[in-house]
Image (cartoon, rainbow, N blue to C red; front, side):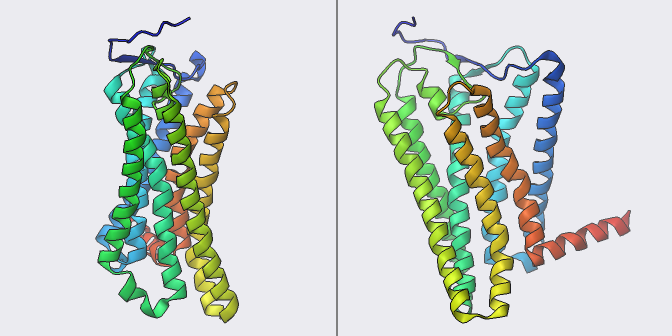
Length: 311
């Protein structure tokens, strides 16, 4: 039985994955492949949108939030995870663990908020096309983006603030990475407030996310049904399909992680689900959005053709 004493050391041991020696390097190279591919695709889309003046439109500028978030969230998680896969010594300082958990939770909450503001943009474009340019100005885009990041940072700051106030009586992170639950489980103090706020955080985030998406898409569907305009319906399908696919991928990968937290008998499955929540959307976002959005798709194809001709 562990005693209720404070641990003075700031060095934490990460439990990690229990991987057989013959699978160590295959797992490492799989993670490296996913990380390299998401770096290439997200940086590529960002560079294309920034460099092409024709893409300096509210829809694409709002989309820039997604690759930035994906790059930050995965860079905080994957390099350290890859190092721990091939290393027998899996240690982190407490401060490093807090930073990783902070950015990881910010990644998750920002993903929801960014897709909500992108849904608002699609609603204005389809339901109020004549007023779109006057509503979705550069100032409005900056304001929506700042709101998405600001809400996420405030919610996560409170979440982590409630955890770092606790003393520690353990020094082993029962996970392959650092998150809020793993950190407050290091304490022998009463963590009821942490659990209550964590539940509030999750319910608020998912309610705002799912509610915002549901309302905007219901209004879009209603407008399309009432007007029965083929061009409008085609434009709605074209611009909304990619956004909805991105949201559903992110939503269900997040749900899988939360559900598996309730099954402690499957710790490795929960760890894998959490990594997939980071990796899968980050790899698919630029592909799905780029291929479903005609203007961006055309720019990507032209760029590839220019490179091919140059070679």
